[in-house]
Length: 278
Image (cartoon, rainbow, N blue to C red; front, side):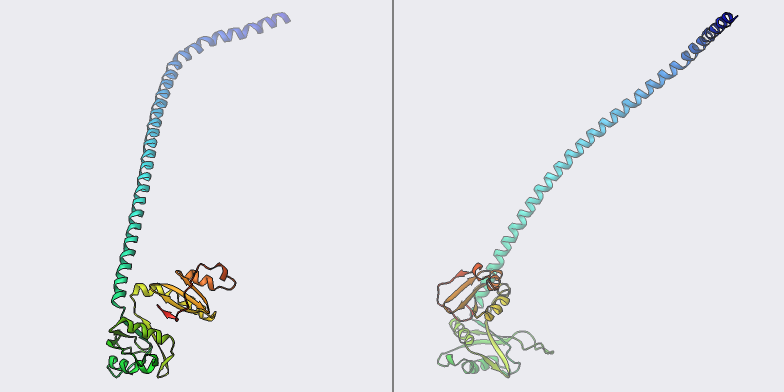
């Protein structure tokens, strides 16, 4: 009986599989065409996607090359612009220097009188100066000093901004030099104000010389006699020592404590000259 049961059990699965086989075949016959169609569709879509990706890659490569070209062009253009700017700057500086030199030449006979009280001249600056110069500067008492023109700069100041500067034009530039030299050696006071004399230069030259002012103040405190050489060099003298500086930075560094031995100034072997301006 046991053997009969096992035989029956072993026959049942085979019968079920045999029954399922036709169903499987039927399902396969129905699904395979659909699956094949789906596979073909997916392959086509991937093929299109690959084509688009390749197109995008080509576009990216093209754009990258264009960007590199534009950067190279920009670099070249920037280089050319920089060169043009440098050339323009150099040309402008040379032109400005030439104009300032011409202007300085036209002013070589002029003297600036600074801090002279207002109205002491009673309206006639030239006559007042002809009378006063030899009083202020006894060293010139025997010289024939001729003033061609003299006037104050700008309108009279209403507020207390200090007196206007006087510009006087000498007949000879040698007279100007003698006056400046004598003024450097003499303290002049008018109505309690210290009056100063200076050469008359263009604004361009004045700016270049003005930057030396702090170094000149420091030099005086250190016992040096400072004066400016045209157009803008600083000369310092102290006893037998004499130094010339082309840059205010070098002059200031020279005057720093314990830095004298590292200065960039040129040692000048000439005899010390008067302080002020050359």
